Each structure stands twice: as structure tokens, then as C-alpha cells.
Image 1 (cartoon, rainbow, N blue to C red):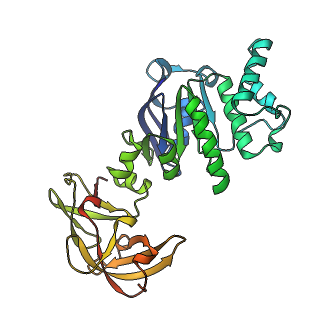
Image 2: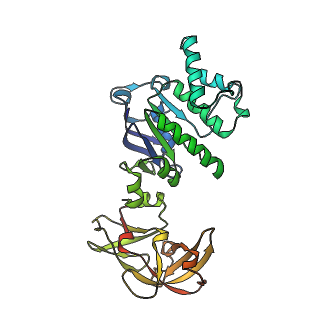
Image 3: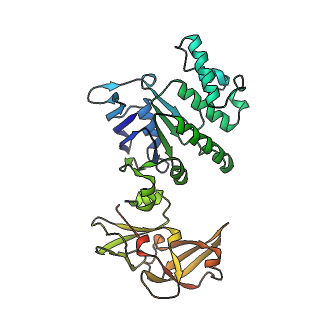
Length: 353
């Protein structure tokens, strides 16, 4: 089941401009709050209409501004799961699932209901109302209701974000198992990079309404091409740069030259370094520089150092560097100390704007 999306929509000063394709996979839309992820899902579902563009699902045109095509939500064959699952509170589990099967013959409805109750481990809960169900049970009912309509596309809008960490892990495990059995395409909206890394194989990064080219999840974390992608993938340190040569940049905010393992693109405007890639060293060397320790914070399993290069540009907040190291590696370091910090060339990431 192939989905092709190429749409634009303006809402006041905000412009959504999104392009991506997905096929029989769980594709993540990853971005910060307000970047347009949920609006994209609503446009695909038919809840909102783009200003222009085209949406095609398995060769069937759902929306085409030039041809004047805009199928109603019930005609699109897609299922949208909201964060709160949006179950009908006055309907039982059976009623919620059957609500999308009203046009089916009675015997066919019963067959489908029985099959879905078994698939989603809901036997014995047919007469329960949503308020009587756990979060995991509500999620399974919502997914069963979506699959009852036999969609070619499932869209999940931050389905785990409102849950505490323990329940989130349980529901994530169940969700992965259920999605593995779904034969169509799934769009998974999230701002949680770790969740995306575990659940999805490919990702489309969105930033301020604009989509970046789809890439493998592993590539996003290993080689993010832009500053927005690097920040969304968890990179906590970045600096404006000037390109010196093919493998050398001047990190302007830090006031130091750095050697890069990868060739530096002509249009690189930043470099990024992940917090756990910095290490402490004994003295001068490749990509080594002196820093003043600003703060030492003990985390559960590691120590977080905030340091500032002695050559840093005054007044620049991005000149501060976050270093995350095992506790034993930085034992004895105090605020106000001077330390030598180093990063390997292969861990310096050139980034476009």
C-alpha cells in the first residue's frame, strides 16, 4: 500500500509544505510541537483540506487541487488514531467496534467483531465501557475499531505521549506487535526520538512546517544533514561554522578549529557534537581544547558537565558545551576547574541550515 503526499496549506503566518512517500511500512513524522505533524495527518484523513497539492493512496487519488478532487473522510479508507483514542464513552467495547460496521450485514458484523476481539485480546470485555478499561485496553479497542473498517493506511498521532513511562513501555510493546501484523502503511507522528528509533525504520523530519527528505532512522542519528534534524535526533551541542577546507571548520561560537572525519559540504553552516562524544584528555592534541567547568550535575547513571571553551565568543549561550560521561570518568572534577576536552574527527557532524 503506497502513500504519496505532496501538499501545501497556509494558516495565518504558518505554511505547511510537505512531501513524502511511504509503502507497507511504519514511517515516522518526527518534529517538535507546532511543526505541522498533526495537520499533515488531518489533511491525509480529509479532516482538513490543503490549499494545493496531491494525496494518493495505492493509486487512488484522495485529494488533487488541480483536478478538484477532495474525497470525504469516510471515502478515503484511512484510520486516524488520536492521542486520547477518542472512544465513544457511552458505547461498550463491542459498540465502539461495531460503530464503523453499520453498513455490513448482521452476520458479517458478528464475524468481524469476534475476529477482532480475538486478535486484540479483548474477549470478555465486550460489555465494558471505556471508563472501565486500562490505557492498554483502550488503545487496543481504538485500533480494533480502525481495522474493522479495513483501512489501507493507519495514522497514529502521538499515541503514547500522555502516558507515564512505565505504562508507555507496556503499550509500546503491544503497539509494535499489532503494527507488525498490519499489512498496510502506518504513519507514526511523534516528537520522541527514542520512540521513533525503536518503532520505525524510516523517518521524515519536519521543521517549522517544512519536511526534509525521508531517510533511514539509523542515518538520522548517525548522519543528520541539517541542524533541525540533529537537534531532533538528540544532539545537544552545536556551533556556527566557517569552512576552512574539505575536512576542517572553525567552530565560531567555541572559537576553535576542528577536524571533521567526513568531507565538509560547501553549504555547511553549523557543526554538531553529541554530548557523549566529548571526552576529557590530558593535554593538547587533535580536536583538543581547554574549557572552564561551569556546572557538575549528577544524573542517575552518569555525570553531566557543562563546560565553556576558554576561546568561546563572549555572551554566546551556544558556546556552552554539555558533556555526558560515566561517573568514574569525571570523578573529582569541580565547578571552576579547567579541563582539556577532545572530540574525535569522525564525531564532528557538519550541518546545513
